[in-house]
Length: 331
Image (cartoon, rainbow, N blue to C red; front, side, top):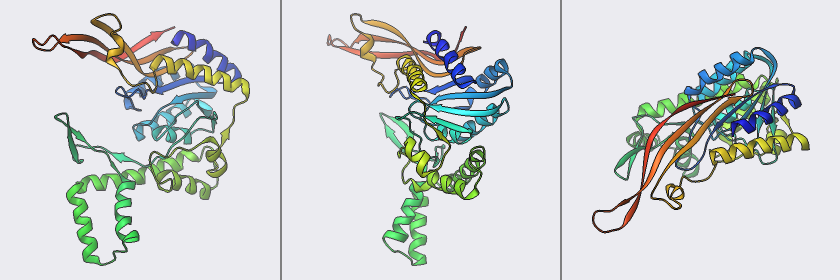
């Protein structure tokens, strides 16, 4: 709970000589959330209270989200401090990794992981499939497109221009040409943003290029995870290993958040119906909070009921979402 975490944030601020902002997007299956532009104003509100300070510590857990929001948030925080560090207790993937690149240093626990930043695009022009009578747009990854073309040219050794033209036309039949163009532009944009952000912790252009290339394509898969050792020794990021006291504090904060948001635990409507036929629930899914201001929480509120199926006497579990939105928890 936020009341418990405030005291922990205060301890962390004393240990790091900084001001702490915590940002968490939940990965509860069935209730996943991502980095989204909605949080920008909440960061502004926290930073207005904090003011311009020598150092800010961003405590972050996320599986990713919008690239430009990640870029904007890091640039915003850097306007309020001379030094920015990112503290990663566990997962910080995709757009979260982009945010980490913009810090002066990255504190990673033994179990913390970063991830590739290769882009996937989802638009109204994307390919779609039907799932339970709903049309679902499939994300298109630039690396998947590159893999398809590499299969033809490198693995199958197809070099005939006419054959290659047919392969490209076949791809265009499956994926709208405008989506293909957008995917390519997104990769170029991410490479540019990542290079600029890395300049805060790495000076050598060749090292920056190596890191960006690996994160954008050389890792091979968007699901690839980058451990602390690989981030430091192989990529050359400015990684700090927490001492035992700091590690235990980071872990305590993370465990409180994990319990509050039920991170990683699938949404199970039946679990609310222990000894009743109707139960209300309120699930926090995103946190943007700081010690001296407040906690902004995105919550889903709903009701689970056992309802009869026609006249059979059987009961079905029915989940109704009543409301979703942001709630402010003050000091």
